[in-house]
Image (cartoon, rainbow, N blue to C red; front, side):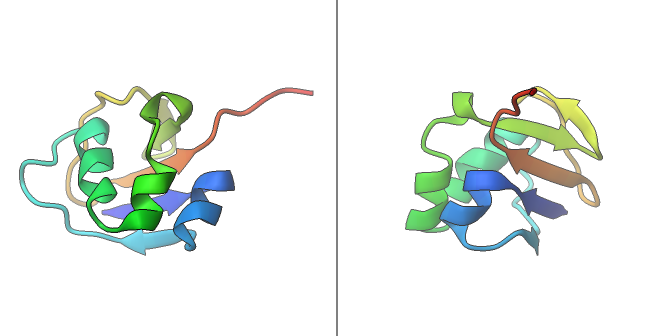
Length: 83
């Protein structure tokens, strides 16, 4: 699974993307975020408030309960504003 980070999420974690193999119990975006929080302080800081995050699964905006699987691309980013 490829996980991409944008905006302040990327800044807090310190990388823009990584290839991951989460455990089998990670079946949706919310459980992925919970698992990522355990990877260190920078992840815990970036994902402290999941309500402040937006995600896309395979380049489509998705809710936190969206299913994910091996081979998916998951992007995590702060809310966007228009202008």
